[in-house]
Image (cartoon, rainbow, N blue to C red):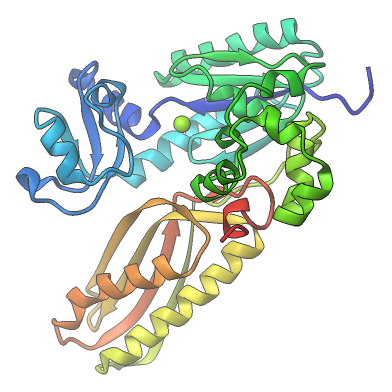
Length: 362
Ligand SMILES: [Mg+2]
């Protein structure tokens, strides 16, 4: 066995936002629950942020317009996202998971990589260990999770998604490429819909077809990310589990020296803050899903507003657009502004490093 060999668990909490809500309101257990925009009797705008497995049986999916969800399943319990709750529960679960790992890396609000090489060197030991992890998460936090076990991060991550909810999938440590071969290319983290379509147009639907390509081809198509992708599909990816704290949210605030009456100046300052925030976010390789503002008027009257996007993104446009829309409400108030803040939350680390494959294609 090479000294490079690792044992990695990828732990993914099942339907996390909904599960956290149901834990607060046990009477909802086993029923369709939707976290997202207000359906307003079917006229609502905005999207489904998350839904329970019972709601999925009615065809509901995250990212679906809330009006469509309401048509398919009007009897579901609809509730707005409660990020404070999710962040609190996440923090507690992550602390438990950390205790099981030699090295621990949080991947998002509900996912983490655990390098457990010193506790489990083979598939059998790792499976028994993963069962202990699942038991702890269930007993201490009342939540279920799915775990992928593999000799590297990418295969463990792909595996955790194979059998949900409450599942466990083991990738043969010496047979990663064979395990991946029959799967569709879209299971690779970082291959989003755009890259998947691009590959499908080239006649490549499965990972085995991707494996047949020469490395040079991937390099031509995807640049530096192609090198990472080649490693992933051939079971050679060897990125270590990084012991690094991940922020729950990032924000910037600007206080005006004198209260500002000209709202264009407030918008300008907010846009400027957003750009600064994006620079920090991008340099750390993060994407975000929630964008918000904080505004303080003369006399310390403070308000916050936020919106949840359809999916994670590392681009600046959705943040700027959201801020613009959220500020509209306050412009009409005509009050002098003392402070303006911009915030992003539900932060996630991009899998392939600094940029996603999707931002590379088209
Ligand atoms: Mg999850």
